[in-house]
Image (cartoon, rainbow, N blue to C red; front, top):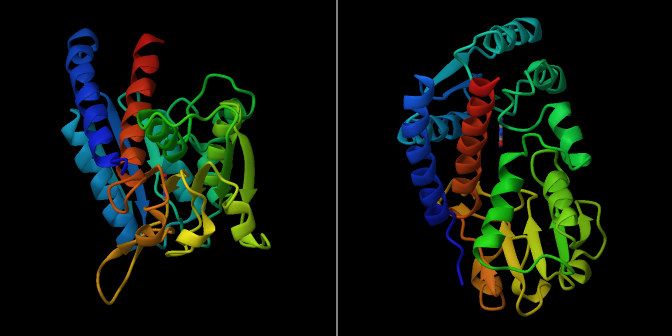
Length: 283
Ligand code: GUN
């Protein structure tokens, strides 16, 4: 069974759009999302455009703030602070990666935790760690929604997460652990990866290595979440970290690439923005 992130994201979008329409009457304005993009990386531009399009579709107002690659860290932080202080802004997202001369950590830390719709600021990471209310990172949140939608049992199961980034691997492992899965985190230095992946009831792959996981590396009935997306320059095709052709016959459920995790990340970003707006309006 293929779990369509596209379909689930559409359902979430419709739900958010309905909520926005009623909140707008109650609070007198729509939620507003500000997205900052530094430099001209084509994939980042594409992601930011998708986020803007989706925001428009659910009825948010939004802006893309495109800044030159040459901007200094101080100038970028000043821009973030300006948005923090703007009462008309509910959500702030700084698209990653940032140019090398800018310390990502410094910029993320400057975002007001209440407006940090990515869930990357340390107050929100702390909240995840301590199981306290806070904004959860979008891709991990979307992955849990996909598993729930597909009725995949999590408690007591062995989840193997490949990748340990702050954006996906690390937080998704924590969310699975909090749902009582037994979690193994593997990464580039893991020896005999196949021996570990063959134990997985749930396999989440987020390492950015096209078709790393092949059919011989998984057991029958595994639930597979493929977070990777790499564009093949020659064919223009997109490939996930999982070799769909050989893995899908063995999987009970699997996400496609594209159309799996990607749309869910954006849907959860909108959900986080709506939540930030409601808290903002009620404070
Ligand atoms: N770059 C790749 N994924 C993400 C994301 O989820 N948020 C931001 N801000 N940048 C990203």
